[in-house]
Image 1 (cartoon, rainbow, N blue to C red):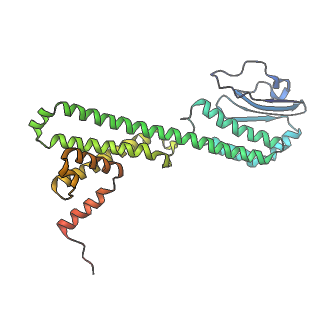
Image 2: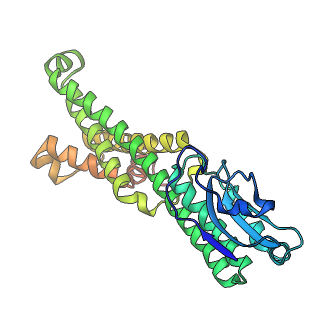
Image 3: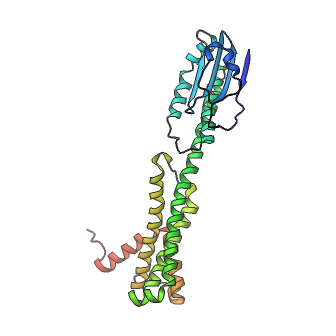
Length: 283
Protein backbone atom coordinates (compact mmCIF):
# COMPACT_ATOMS: atom_id res chain seq x y z
CA UNK A 1 0.00 0.00 0.00
CA UNK A 2 1.23 3.46 -0.85
CA UNK A 3 0.35 6.88 0.57
CA UNK A 4 1.33 10.03 -1.31
CA UNK A 5 0.56 13.51 0.05
CA UNK A 6 0.98 16.79 -1.79
CA UNK A 7 4.14 18.79 -1.06
CA UNK A 8 2.01 21.97 -1.33
CA UNK A 9 4.34 23.56 -3.85
CA UNK A 10 2.94 26.67 -5.56
CA UNK A 11 1.05 26.06 -8.75
CA UNK A 12 2.87 26.50 -12.01
CA UNK A 13 1.18 27.22 -15.30
CA UNK A 14 1.83 23.69 -16.47
CA UNK A 15 0.49 20.31 -15.36
CA UNK A 16 2.63 17.83 -13.44
CA UNK A 17 5.28 16.27 -15.69
CA UNK A 18 7.40 14.30 -13.18
CA UNK A 19 6.91 10.62 -12.51
CA UNK A 20 3.29 9.98 -11.62
CA UNK A 21 3.37 7.22 -9.03
CA UNK A 22 -0.40 6.93 -8.91
CA UNK A 23 -0.46 5.76 -12.52
CA UNK A 24 0.79 2.43 -11.26
CA UNK A 25 -2.91 1.96 -10.49
CA UNK A 26 -4.50 1.20 -13.90
CA UNK A 27 -7.72 3.07 -13.03
CA UNK A 28 -5.73 6.28 -12.36
CA UNK A 29 -3.94 6.60 -15.70
CA UNK A 30 -4.22 9.86 -17.68
CA UNK A 31 -6.01 11.83 -14.96
CA UNK A 32 -5.98 15.68 -15.32
CA UNK A 33 -3.87 16.18 -12.20
CA UNK A 34 -2.61 19.73 -11.75
CA UNK A 35 -1.91 19.46 -8.02
CA UNK A 36 -1.89 16.16 -6.15
CA UNK A 37 -3.48 16.27 -2.69
CA UNK A 38 -3.24 12.60 -1.72
CA UNK A 39 -3.54 9.06 -2.99
CA UNK A 40 -3.52 5.75 -1.20
CA UNK A 41 -4.11 2.09 -1.88
CA UNK A 42 -3.24 -0.84 -4.07
CA UNK A 43 -4.44 -2.04 -7.45
CA UNK A 44 -7.72 -3.47 -6.15
CA UNK A 45 -8.51 -0.74 -3.62
CA UNK A 46 -7.25 2.83 -4.00
CA UNK A 47 -8.29 6.45 -4.13
CA UNK A 48 -6.77 9.69 -5.41
CA UNK A 49 -7.76 13.28 -4.59
CA UNK A 50 -6.33 16.14 -6.63
CA UNK A 51 -6.94 19.56 -8.13
CA UNK A 52 -7.60 19.48 -11.85
CA UNK A 53 -6.59 22.10 -14.39
CA UNK A 54 -9.52 24.34 -13.37
CA UNK A 55 -8.43 24.05 -9.71
CA UNK A 56 -11.57 22.08 -8.87
CA UNK A 57 -11.36 19.28 -6.31
CA UNK A 58 -11.39 16.02 -8.26
CA UNK A 59 -11.19 12.43 -7.08
CA UNK A 60 -11.36 8.85 -8.24
CA UNK A 61 -11.55 5.44 -6.60
CA UNK A 62 -11.02 1.91 -7.87
CA UNK A 63 -14.52 0.56 -8.57
CA UNK A 64 -15.85 -2.01 -6.11
CA UNK A 65 -13.04 -1.30 -3.64
CA UNK A 66 -13.30 -0.38 0.04
CA UNK A 67 -12.49 3.27 -0.67
CA UNK A 68 -15.20 3.30 -3.35
CA UNK A 69 -17.73 2.24 -0.72
CA UNK A 70 -16.45 4.94 1.69
CA UNK A 71 -16.74 7.57 -1.03
CA UNK A 72 -20.40 6.69 -1.53
CA UNK A 73 -20.93 7.26 2.19
CA UNK A 74 -19.27 10.69 2.09
CA UNK A 75 -22.18 12.50 0.44
CA UNK A 76 -22.42 15.23 3.09
CA UNK A 77 -18.76 16.23 2.80
CA UNK A 78 -18.90 16.06 -1.01
CA UNK A 79 -21.99 18.29 -1.02
CA UNK A 80 -20.25 20.85 1.21
CA UNK A 81 -17.17 20.80 -1.01
CA UNK A 82 -19.28 21.39 -4.13
CA UNK A 83 -21.16 24.21 -2.40
CA UNK A 84 -17.92 25.92 -1.36
CA UNK A 85 -16.44 25.49 -4.84
CA UNK A 86 -19.40 27.48 -6.13
CA UNK A 87 -18.30 30.50 -4.05
CA UNK A 88 -17.02 33.16 -6.51
CA UNK A 89 -13.23 32.98 -6.48
CA UNK A 90 -12.02 34.38 -9.80
CA UNK A 91 -10.70 37.44 -7.95
CA UNK A 92 -8.44 35.31 -5.73
CA UNK A 93 -4.76 34.89 -6.64
CA UNK A 94 -3.92 31.39 -7.83
CA UNK A 95 -1.84 30.44 -4.73
CA UNK A 96 -4.72 31.50 -2.45
CA UNK A 97 -7.28 29.61 -4.52
CA UNK A 98 -4.97 26.58 -4.54
CA UNK A 99 -4.66 26.62 -0.74
CA UNK A 100 -8.44 26.96 -0.31
CA UNK A 101 -9.28 24.11 -2.67
CA UNK A 102 -6.49 21.96 -1.17
CA UNK A 103 -8.12 22.28 2.26
CA UNK A 104 -11.39 21.11 0.73
CA UNK A 105 -9.68 18.17 -0.93
CA UNK A 106 -7.87 17.22 2.27
CA UNK A 107 -11.20 17.08 4.11
CA UNK A 108 -12.31 14.40 1.63
CA UNK A 109 -9.07 12.50 2.27
CA UNK A 110 -9.83 12.52 6.00
CA UNK A 111 -13.30 11.10 5.32
CA UNK A 112 -11.83 8.28 3.23
CA UNK A 113 -9.48 7.56 6.14
CA UNK A 114 -12.44 7.27 8.57
CA UNK A 115 -11.76 10.61 10.27
CA UNK A 116 -15.03 12.59 9.96
CA UNK A 117 -14.19 14.89 12.89
CA UNK A 118 -11.07 16.31 11.24
CA UNK A 119 -12.83 16.30 7.87
CA UNK A 120 -15.48 18.65 9.25
CA UNK A 121 -12.83 20.74 11.00
CA UNK A 122 -10.94 21.19 7.72
CA UNK A 123 -14.11 22.36 5.99
CA UNK A 124 -14.59 24.96 8.75
CA UNK A 125 -10.97 26.10 8.42
CA UNK A 126 -11.37 26.39 4.65
CA UNK A 127 -14.44 28.61 5.10
CA UNK A 128 -12.62 30.84 7.60
CA UNK A 129 -9.58 31.02 5.35
CA UNK A 130 -11.44 32.02 2.18
CA UNK A 131 -13.67 34.50 4.07
CA UNK A 132 -10.61 36.23 5.52
CA UNK A 133 -8.91 36.44 2.11
CA UNK A 134 -12.13 37.73 0.51
CA UNK A 135 -12.43 40.45 3.14
CA UNK A 136 -8.82 41.50 2.55
CA UNK A 137 -9.35 41.80 -1.19
CA UNK A 138 -12.61 43.71 -0.82
CA UNK A 139 -10.99 46.13 1.64
CA UNK A 140 -8.14 46.67 -0.79
CA UNK A 141 -10.60 47.62 -3.55
CA UNK A 142 -12.45 50.01 -1.21
CA UNK A 143 -9.28 51.62 0.08
CA UNK A 144 -7.76 52.06 -3.36
CA UNK A 145 -10.89 53.79 -4.66
CA UNK A 146 -11.01 56.08 -1.62
CA UNK A 147 -7.32 56.91 -1.84
CA UNK A 148 -7.41 57.73 -5.56
CA UNK A 149 -10.55 59.84 -5.19
CA UNK A 150 -9.08 61.80 -2.29
CA UNK A 151 -5.78 62.20 -4.13
CA UNK A 152 -7.61 63.65 -7.14
CA UNK A 153 -9.42 66.14 -4.89
CA UNK A 154 -6.19 67.14 -3.15
CA UNK A 155 -4.37 67.62 -6.47
CA UNK A 156 -7.26 69.74 -7.74
CA UNK A 157 -7.18 71.81 -4.56
CA UNK A 158 -3.41 72.29 -4.84
CA UNK A 159 -3.84 73.59 -8.38
CA UNK A 160 -6.60 75.92 -7.16
CA UNK A 161 -4.34 77.14 -4.35
CA UNK A 162 -1.58 77.88 -6.85
CA UNK A 163 -4.08 79.85 -8.93
CA UNK A 164 -5.80 81.52 -5.99
CA UNK A 165 -5.25 85.14 -7.12
CA UNK A 166 -6.92 84.39 -10.44
CA UNK A 167 -9.75 82.34 -8.88
CA UNK A 168 -10.37 84.96 -6.20
CA UNK A 169 -10.60 87.70 -8.79
CA UNK A 170 -12.85 85.56 -10.98
CA UNK A 171 -15.18 83.96 -8.40
CA UNK A 172 -14.83 85.96 -5.22
CA UNK A 173 -13.03 85.85 -1.89
CA UNK A 174 -14.98 82.82 -0.63
CA UNK A 175 -13.70 80.51 -3.36
CA UNK A 176 -10.46 79.34 -1.75
CA UNK A 177 -11.97 78.85 1.75
CA UNK A 178 -14.75 76.79 0.15
CA UNK A 179 -12.24 74.62 -1.71
CA UNK A 180 -10.20 74.12 1.46
CA UNK A 181 -13.37 73.17 3.36
CA UNK A 182 -14.40 70.55 0.80
CA UNK A 183 -10.90 69.13 0.63
CA UNK A 184 -10.86 68.86 4.42
CA UNK A 185 -14.15 66.99 4.29
CA UNK A 186 -12.74 64.54 1.76
CA UNK A 187 -9.65 64.03 3.95
CA UNK A 188 -11.88 63.39 6.95
CA UNK A 189 -13.89 60.83 4.97
CA UNK A 190 -10.66 59.08 3.93
CA UNK A 191 -9.59 58.91 7.58
CA UNK A 192 -12.95 57.33 8.40
CA UNK A 193 -12.47 54.72 5.66
CA UNK A 194 -8.90 53.95 6.75
CA UNK A 195 -9.90 53.41 10.38
CA UNK A 196 -13.26 51.75 9.78
CA UNK A 197 -12.82 49.17 7.02
CA UNK A 198 -11.95 46.40 9.49
CA UNK A 199 -15.46 46.75 10.94
CA UNK A 200 -17.21 46.51 7.58
CA UNK A 201 -18.57 43.25 6.23
CA UNK A 202 -17.66 43.39 2.55
CA UNK A 203 -18.51 40.93 -0.19
CA UNK A 204 -16.06 40.66 -3.11
CA UNK A 205 -18.65 38.60 -4.98
CA UNK A 206 -20.38 41.93 -5.67
CA UNK A 207 -17.46 42.79 -7.95
CA UNK A 208 -14.59 45.21 -8.06
CA UNK A 209 -16.60 48.04 -9.64
CA UNK A 210 -19.18 48.07 -6.81
CA UNK A 211 -16.43 48.45 -4.22
CA UNK A 212 -14.79 51.20 -6.28
CA UNK A 213 -18.12 53.03 -6.45
CA UNK A 214 -18.63 52.63 -2.69
CA UNK A 215 -15.13 53.92 -1.97
CA UNK A 216 -15.67 57.02 -4.11
CA UNK A 217 -19.16 57.52 -2.68
CA UNK A 218 -17.82 57.59 0.88
CA UNK A 219 -15.37 60.35 -0.03
CA UNK A 220 -18.05 62.33 -1.86
CA UNK A 221 -20.33 61.97 1.17
CA UNK A 222 -17.61 63.46 3.37
CA UNK A 223 -17.13 66.28 0.88
CA UNK A 224 -20.86 67.06 0.87
CA UNK A 225 -20.96 66.97 4.67
CA UNK A 226 -18.14 69.53 4.69
CA UNK A 227 -20.15 71.77 2.34
CA UNK A 228 -23.06 71.71 4.82
CA UNK A 229 -20.76 72.68 7.68
CA UNK A 230 -19.07 75.44 5.66
CA UNK A 231 -22.39 76.97 4.62
CA UNK A 232 -23.76 76.66 8.16
CA UNK A 233 -20.72 78.49 9.54
CA UNK A 234 -20.79 81.12 6.80
CA UNK A 235 -24.50 81.81 7.30
CA UNK A 236 -24.29 81.85 11.08
CA UNK A 237 -26.60 78.88 11.57
CA UNK A 238 -23.81 77.27 13.57
CA UNK A 239 -21.58 79.43 15.75
CA UNK A 240 -18.19 78.24 16.96
CA UNK A 241 -15.57 79.85 19.17
CA UNK A 242 -12.94 78.22 16.99
CA UNK A 243 -14.13 80.13 13.93
CA UNK A 244 -13.83 83.43 15.74
CA UNK A 245 -10.36 82.53 16.96
CA UNK A 246 -8.86 81.48 13.65
CA UNK A 247 -11.29 81.47 10.78
CA UNK A 248 -9.79 79.40 7.97
CA UNK A 249 -7.93 76.74 10.01
CA UNK A 250 -10.94 76.37 12.31
CA UNK A 251 -13.33 75.93 9.39
CA UNK A 252 -11.01 73.35 7.85
CA UNK A 253 -10.87 71.46 11.16
CA UNK A 254 -14.64 71.43 11.60
CA UNK A 255 -15.14 70.35 7.98
CA UNK A 256 -12.65 67.53 8.42
CA UNK A 257 -14.49 66.34 11.52
CA UNK A 258 -17.76 66.58 9.61
CA UNK A 259 -16.29 64.47 6.80
CA UNK A 260 -15.10 61.90 9.32
CA UNK A 261 -18.34 61.46 11.29
CA UNK A 262 -20.98 62.81 8.87
CA UNK A 263 -23.30 62.98 11.88
CA UNK A 264 -23.58 66.73 12.17
CA UNK A 265 -25.46 67.25 8.90
CA UNK A 266 -28.85 65.88 10.04
CA UNK A 267 -28.64 68.05 13.16
CA UNK A 268 -27.87 71.16 11.11
CA UNK A 269 -30.69 70.42 8.67
CA UNK A 270 -33.09 70.00 11.58
CA UNK A 271 -31.94 73.31 13.08
CA UNK A 272 -32.48 75.12 9.76
CA UNK A 273 -35.97 73.67 9.52
CA UNK A 274 -36.86 74.80 13.03
CA UNK A 275 -35.42 78.31 12.53
CA UNK A 276 -37.19 78.89 9.23
CA UNK A 277 -40.33 76.77 9.41
CA UNK A 278 -40.82 76.37 13.12
CA UNK A 279 -41.15 73.30 15.28
CA UNK A 280 -43.63 70.66 14.14
CA UNK A 281 -47.18 71.06 15.46
CA UNK A 282 -48.06 68.54 18.12
CA UNK A 283 -51.65 67.69 18.75
